[in-house]
Amino acid sequence: MKYYKVLKNDGSCVNGGSGKWYLPKKQKDGTWKPGKWMPEIEGKLEPCESGYHICRPSDLIHWLDEAIFEVEYDGEMVEDDEKCVVRKARLLRRVETWNEKSARMFAADCAERVLHIYEKKHPDDGRPRKAIQAARDYANGKITKNELAAARDAARDAAWYAARDAAWDAARDAARDAAWDAAWAAAWAAARDAAGDAAGDAAGYAAGYAERKWQTERLFEYLEAK
Image (cartoon, rainbow, N blue to C red; front, side, top):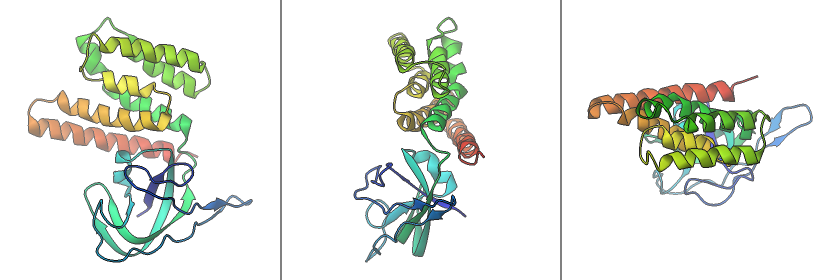
């Protein structure tokens, strides 16, 4: 199984971590020289307390940010619900297919998945749909940042009329300026809204789980693109 680490572009930790990881370097022949091993953790490994947090493929959707790296570990591993904790790890290579364009496109995909929930209640309001399309157009260089901002603002105005309706948050997040934040937020909003539209706790859990499964599969379509 491949394991991953989500960081800022400069190797800084995100999602509550601190410090920086040693970055891998791309060679002239296209191969990667791994980063140095991070200092070995002493004592007991505890999720969110002690150890290096890394992701299985199914965990990635919970931790999206600027950069995704393939990582290897050595020694003990403790598995948690949405991450693994290890004593020793290093970055192998950057996943270059995860960038501002793919993150924005992924966010738009997540938002569009639940757009029908909003449009069922507000069939005459096309602002969230236009915001999603604007996110795609901006990612593909078809519109300017000002035009993207205008679509985002129009979608935000829709919130005043449907403050907590499903799909609003996802549509808004897909059009945000920070693509990786948009991807993270839109993925969460889409899964939450899919669950919220289902009747009953069991059905809601199943809907949310199914949406997360789809999101992971869609994310890896972008990450594994040639």
